Image 1 (cartoon, one colour):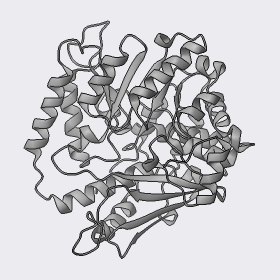
Image 2 (cartoon, rainbow, N blue to C red):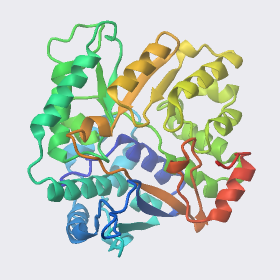
Image 3 (cartoon, rainbow, N blue to C red):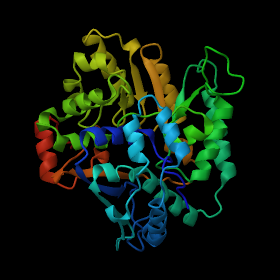
Image 4 (cartoon, rainbow, N blue to C red):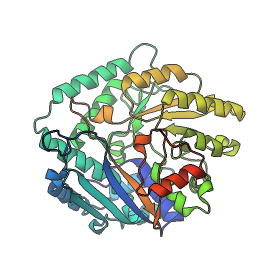
Length: 411
């Protein structure tokens, strides 16, 4: 059994789910799975990394996932987080994922199709554990004797790079649940990072300082290891607001206002790439510049994005050194260091590293996602600064979205 706790997911699933409970409890949604790894085997004509042979194992793991419920200690931990409300914890005490909302199908190409359809409130927690299941099933079949020594050597090198002179204020976080090699390897990586980089909770911690491991997005490991759980909103929240808000052009503003209504200044990191950074900056006005603590980058060139965000804050007479820039798009340690060196002292900085921490053993990781494609029967989409990340099942809607947000079609 791969997933043993419903806390084995990212924090932003709970923070978004709480908003759904309070503001959108009747929303109906659809999610679809996509594997972004390119390539077809020239002999067979099938996907180079076929998942179809493992579809029964994946179904069995999802069936086991749907038997889980929250334990009292887990609910108590969630209740201890300042931004989690008691009625939401009461709801989670009754919650179970329902297998009727998810289907997994093998395709002739060797790929798989995963579709999740149902109430947003009852399907939102599927994404992260299902992606973790697909990863672990794939790798335990294709790499039954993984080269853990190679993974440990690579991890040790990353720690050495981060501990280099002049980088003591560079802090990273683990964002790697969805694409990890396995749950066991994920836990080992976190233990090694805690020991190698230190945390605010580490033994021997010097008051007034903090280690270089800021925390983890994974709520279960945060609870088990005494780490800080990290996360606010994901793309699905802003996508859903395309169907839930009063007017499509105002959907980004509506999403940010709905978030602020729920958290009243807490969890104040805005996601900037649902329509690309230019469209985001048009909506992220002086009010939002002051109201939100910072912004998160997740597509496009991070160096250009950072410069544009600093310029945006300066033009709105907001001191960027009081704001946080979070970088989280396909980061490696060398790229993280380069970003830190360019922006240190100019803003507060945070770095979320995913696959490169939790699935770097020498094998090509699966680039898999599950994205919302419909809400209340209407298509929804993400139009990011990295076109390969776009995902929608309605080309006419994509064209309309580009027109509404004045987005130039790539190519």
